[in-house]
Length: 597
Image (cartoon, rainbow, N blue to C red):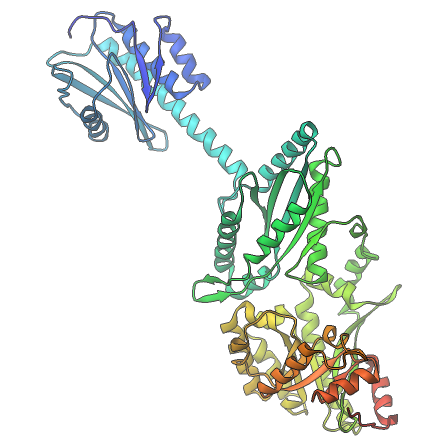
């Protein structure tokens, strides 16, 4: 090889960065830098220095290609053509000529290959054309290559472990651990600034239903799409993460006003108006959002999360698809929750559940036309528990499907008893849970029960909600069409409270619309025909459906409904929900009284 020393003035180049390497780098010093994980630019410069110190009279150089960038240790910068040539050399191995130095060079390539057979770079030794590389240089370069490979491998592993520790593997968003650390940092920073910190938790209302209906693959894809949509909604300074399951977190640091949290939560909720296209399914997904704000020094990260989570659960319970802001009044334990869970596990087997029935009245004649079956639970020590308290727990525990099937079976059995007792022509309406409705075999299971019963299929009415159908419209339409083909009546419950398109609803084989009691409460002496209520009734008739109003409590309300051509009602005006035996007694003793406008 030619003469000349490269021990002075070596440079390690990584991209456009240049790092000077002094004469003081010794062999051992360079190796220790590699092991300690110094920045890659300085590390490469140290590797170059090692090669330069091997033989002071040898014109040699070391070049390392790492992460698709060429890092150079040489006396001069290579021109673009040289970089391309070296890239090819590292990819193919062998000998190449680099002409832009004004001299011909031989080059020898040593590939950096990890234990897992991953190519992470290459070391190139080049010298004057026809010269040979000293064997001692080869041996020491082998050692340099081994340690360089180890250093890069450790760097990759460290980066991978760090990424996995702080990212969600499904959505590739930040994960809950990162968010908890970020919340803590934001709260600590607020001690210096005096500003507030906000947290929003977003929970998908119908994810469990979709996952059970379409499978985990579709559920995972939905989570990815939701994550992407929410990520697009983020504003500078805000941070977002997946909290696990169907939850997403949004952190809003450095707030001057808590109003910013509620307004941004409303913006996020609006992103769920448009459906998600998952494969062949168009899914309308609703979300419940809980918000919490911590003023400077008010609470720690764990408490802020607890508050936001409490608000989210409150939003789910009160009215799904809404935003709830944390309030200290929300921190109340459900009555005897643990005791209730313990007893609910065996309530069905111990026959602690009962079905009460609320009459449905035909206004023009005052006659009893049907009843609605309503689940009740008589706790061994606490007595009757409100359905609003125990039904959500049944859903959380995954028992609502079995209990719902039992209610249908019991309602059919009881209707047979009433028919034999003289209440012929009476029908029974049963609420169907979202979990029941999501099962492909649901319609067939109802058909099997009817085949062994003495009632007519049209004596059974199944009540479903708009959200249950719109979650997966194609599945909902197939399910309802099959049920209707059996002769079963279909009622759309809580009509008017959803956000469904009338064009979709008109495709459903429904026979009855149930108007939610929130509209009935708007009837007053001063306004006996609220425009919205009147429009809903006319809409029902336009869909060729009979209309029934629930929650009717006064004669004025009944008369107003009759004036708006609503011919059936149920509510405390006529009777509260009754046990089966009392309902029979009530029906036989009453005198039908027509109600007119």
